[in-house]
Amino acid sequence: MKQILVVAPSWIGDAVLSQPLLTGLKARWPLAEIDIVAPPWVVPIYCRMNEVRDVVAHPFGHGDLKLLKRRAFGRALAARTRYDRAYILPNTIKSALIAWFADIPELVAYRGEARAWLLSDCRTLDKARLPTMAERFAWLADDADRPLHQPVATPALKIDEVNRSRCLQKLGLLGRNHAKPIIALCPGAEYGPAKRWPVGHFATYAKQALDRGEQVWLFGSKADHTIGDEINQMTDGRCENLCGQTALADAIDLLSLASHVVTNDSGLMHVACAVGVPVTALYGSSSPNFTPPLSPRARVISLKLECSPCFERVCPLGHFRCMNDLSPEILINTPQP
Image (cartoon, rainbow, N blue to C red):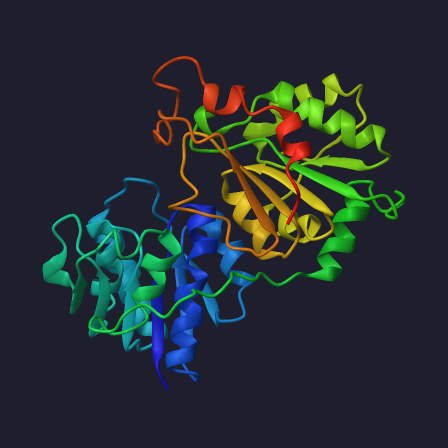
């Protein structure tokens, strides 16, 4: 029986997009046991994947080398399980060292940051052949001389109904009329403001939903709470601002109740797709050709301006037309999938 370790990426959306790799590994070795090493903030994503046996949180922040601590951490992994193979998804030498210190004989990853000497299977990335992040992750499951099996699997996260009920009660939502459709808005994007639809546009869309008799719930991190408050104020306090009020596992469960999710290109966009609800994904500075929403129930809306995608955190031209000109009316007049 194969014992496999996957060193996970550090972004929530990337973690969701790595599930096709895990699906491919289980297809190749159905009895394989797959463990994940991940930063604490993405651990809840992997806890909701059927392919995963166990998730181990590592203690290293962004940019931390901490060589001796990495060595100790790798040795601790080796002591708990004798792994046959490891797949390293971040492109850093630091992430590869975790598996190398665990004395895992087969290390599979893409070439990057002078780490080829650590790897037994060092892949050269062909961006034209593998344009999306999910495809790049998924191809690692097969031998290097085999083409990627298409299409890649659609991510699917498990729902904890007990936790969902607990969250509804804790947040005072249990007694609400759930016959009313729930519109979930995700106005944040950790990468930067260039990926965020303007607050006023979210508020206008929310007002129309509320006037139709729908509920509007706002999702995001603590950093997004102020944005949520602004939207709520513009709608006369009729929204439920859940930004910063839910852990990631709670957001997974509550998003599964939505009849429609409107979201920036963010981690929560990929989470919403993975719980199977209808999603409208808004793209400005980023590209749906690289990190598309992997769901048959998702639609992408982008103005496709000449200056986008720029992949900048802040609009380098100062006009931010890719999002400012994407009006709420465009969403309303675009058919849902």
